[in-house]
Image 1 (cartoon, rainbow, N blue to C red):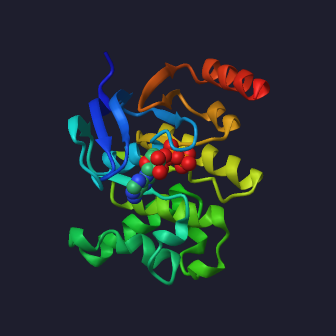
Image 2: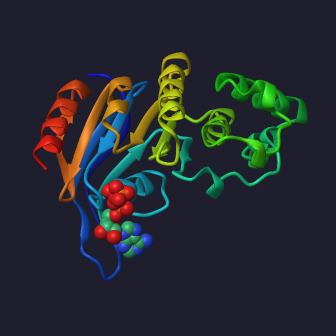
Length: 224
Ligand SMILES: Nc1ncnc2c1ncn2[C@@H]1O[C@H](COP(=O)(O)OP(=O)(O)OP(=O)(O)O)[C@@H](O)[C@H]1O
């Protein structure tokens, strides 16, 4: 069996004073693959991603995830903290105490990987939404992240930038061997991934071939 980069085993989680959101939730993502997580509003997709990122702890069950893991939020303005593109990517390397030359090299490599090399000195405020998301992804690449967790990264993008971003992540998974788990509501994005999970009522009710899942969800959308 292929090695797994993410293993979620019987995880339960509920917010304080609220209902249990995840009930015996289990999934595995093979190393070096691009998987998506779908489900209706409030089904627990963001909660699961936050558990995977270590921002929350499960009440029971087990999570194993290859490290380091990088997180990309729905709104890039919530995670880009420095004034320019290059400085923001370098910021994530501060804790690693690398020599300056190596920091420069990592920043350049990461920006080249997301086709932003030429924009190194550009102020963050002068970027489009899709470019901002690519800066956030470059930050994870510079940190040599094994896993990329993306929480509806295209929610604020127009349809063209949306498909550009998902295609970019597809290329990164292929070229850098990264494992990606991407939360989405957009069925056209399923064309780019290796597999998908459908989360409902706190657990994974379907998983596997994205074409089959897309078909299933399109039929549901036609009915309602
Ligand atoms: N910080 C919080 N405190 C309390 N309850 C929360 C918190 N965040 C989310 N919830 C609740 O947990 C449940 C799952 O929310 P979550 O955001 O994980 O769902 P989701 O599948 O990502 O939804 P969406 O598709 O709308 O983004 C919801 O009922 C939500 O109201």
